[in-house]
Image 1: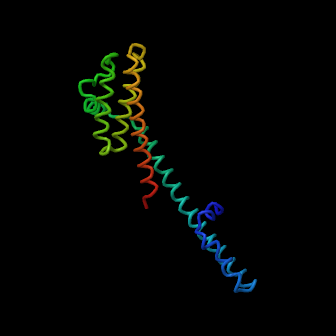
Image 2: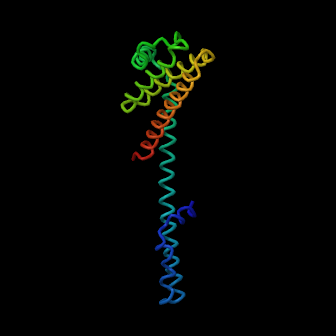
Image 3: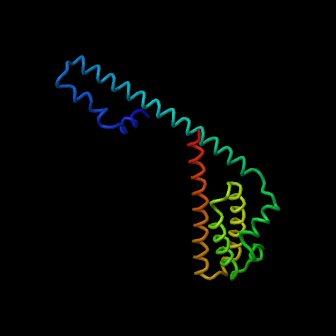
Length: 178
């Protein structure tokens, strides 16, 4: 760890012993080197402490996230969320090869519109809806036109990217919090 910090230090800290070597005695140069080494050790210790704290915060965030995901989703809230995100396509199990692509389009339009206000729990509901859409997609995939399937795959990827981006953002905030 200390070696990694050594690489990040400004050149002036590392070159200080060389700059003083012309006008000093070996004993003075030895003292300058010792002082520089102590400064490096102090900086490395501080960096190690910060990394340790960040690791604990990340572990706490992960633990809270796992506990949240173990909580079952409220069926009424999920139904409301499904209606909000899918509108007329809310009956996912009845989607056909011709209606599933517009359902994904509707879903992603709503996700894009609301995602910035969502909590992690809201994302849990959106993910559950996405899983149901994906299950229906797999069930009828062989009857879907190629271009619709390609568009659906792109929308699935976009959803995953948005969800992952939110997770990374929340993790970053959790690590930075005092």
